Length: 147
Image 1: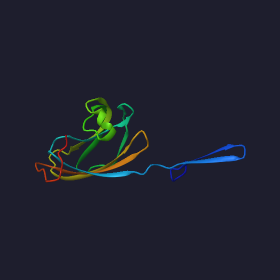
Image 2: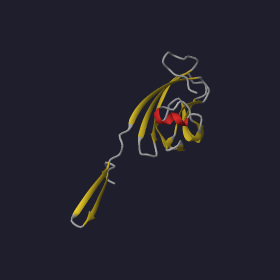
Image 3: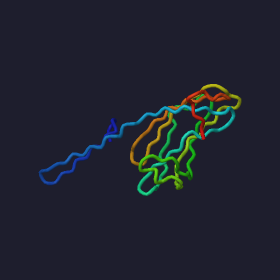
Image 4: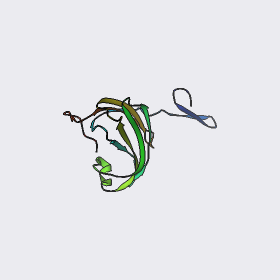
């Protein structure tokens, strides 16, 4: 593997050579906006790697930029699947494993905070989430409440 994260392999059979190149998948960026009550931990999103008949695995999650006015942690464990789209709708109501991102504001803090994290799924796909938070009593229009 070289500095551009490309894997190049040569397979030779007699006078024939086959070159295989696996490029890293392009990261997809998502923006998440949440309104969080002051002093309370809030689960922001859950992530699972899904395969076959609703088999799940825990993806790798890494916080890229820490929030300045609170903390973000990743908690792994069992989860119930709901509101699946497309092929994943068949998994609604079933349980599996996953990881969730939980944000906790600093004691007494009210205002704005933000952080970024990356999810690497078992198939190699990578998503980057930019999270903007409003901490306090307000629930501004367009800002979803966490579960």
